[in-house]
Image (tube, rainbow, N blue to C red; front, side, top):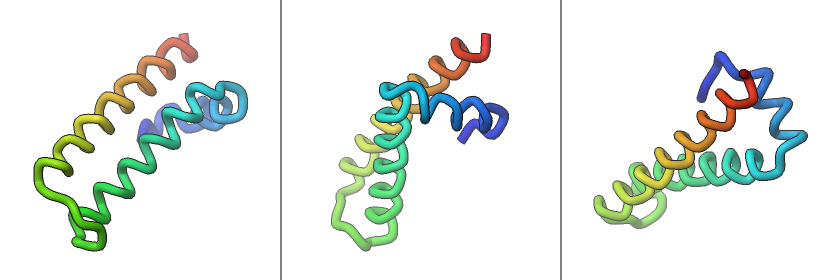
Length: 71
């Protein structure tokens, strides 16, 4: 996610607790969605779609923080 901001992500993960929480939550959702899609964890299509929307909102928030920090 956001390879162009790799160094900034590393920096923010050590200095910005809010960013770190959002980043970790995004990764947790990504893993959970993958487990559901693979049938490892139970989940309906609707539940998966809801989690994908939540993950996308987190990604948008992370991108906003990255753009602001890069400016």
